[in-house]
Image (cartoon, rainbow, N blue to C red; front, side, top):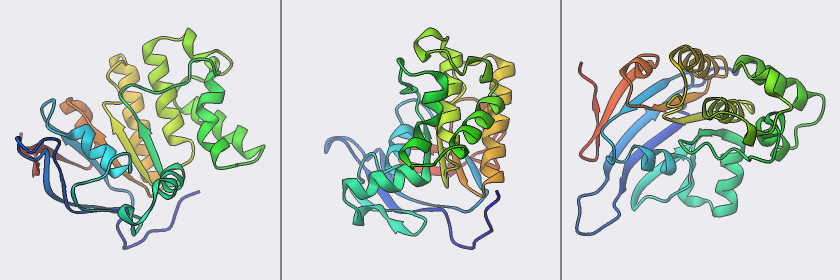
Length: 231
């Protein structure tokens, strides 16, 4: 089911700054950004410039030194840890570089985890899980344990899990690094499709120009700032 359009941004950054050492420049320095429903942004940049840190701040996994992150109008700084956890569980889909798939659960159980946490009942949970397994091409693996699968297959499990609860904000950190070109293209198309179909906002962190080109626009994180991409 598609969400109705809204003039309010899904996510807004206001003067966001983060440093990890007083002796070094800020990793992120006064970032401002707005993403509205259906917008899909690619962020490129060299290793170590703060791309993953930016995603952690957006998801409330880390706290900024200054500035604000607003998700659907909620300032994350006003929430305690439990409040951030509940908001993240409902509104954020996160594809981590390290996957964080649970090896002793089946593929189906891993993908269904966000729906379990949101207490989505049967048969809706089963229907949505199977739809996402089909979309990512891993339906034949549904009953297999994650520990038995290849890195590329596990990566697709992580992506399916991030999308299954139809998040308002999708954060993808190098989501196709372990996929062959054909699977990567299918996965990138699915990420874009889900952002658009669910009127969500999406941020794709990538080193790949081909992957970045699937987004609506590209920015580069450099010297603590987000700058327009120029080929």
